[in-house]
Image: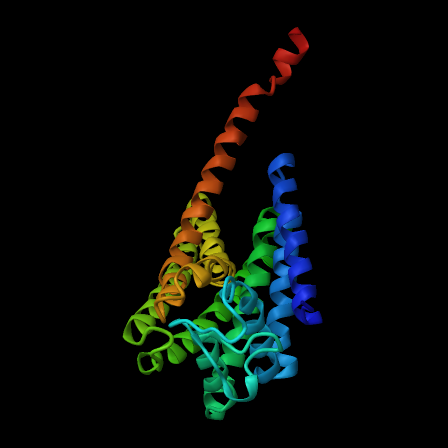
Length: 295
């Protein structure tokens, strides 16, 4: 079985990313994991902006074809799988059935009105900007000489996620008519995802305006978790739930829609508390200057 080059390259990049996560747990540092994840995100998103929705979506849907067709014959379908005209919604030649949400995704933005496609472009562009700037903020805190730049980047981050969220809510308001997504449940789910992402961003801004740097840090980390959840957990969960839930048309996509952002916040909160506890232990274990002299 030959794998399309674009799909194989993405799989290899994801494999390297997983290895960086394992190494991160062993070394206690996840900087490489974050940087690789951001890099892959940019490649996937920029593909839409440069190549257009037809190529961007067909490449994206192709990432799931291998998993959603596990155990099925090449011409065998399932309730959560569908075909598309000329097999254009995926770059796989082997598979003629694809996740039904992917078929609908392709049709809505390749054959839909220009406004819908432009809203998708805007959502991708501004959320990508916010995603990158957010990590610059987290890696370089706003203390000392960096304070002015931190404030400026914070405003740009918040402005970008505001615009990206407006476009996302606008798009999701049309999802009640898309049965492959889950209809009204999908519309409400995407709105809840936007609420989690934007709500944590707003709380981060409110905290710093109230003068609480500690609370600002906590909410910024939660905001990062929501962003990682809505982008990465959303996509990774589909790999697992796609083949497991293919007997129900929209169960897999609905699970990702509703669970990804809240789960991202929970993981970020767990990681923050774990890091803070370890920092306290390390601080207590470090001898003071007087203790060092006496020893």
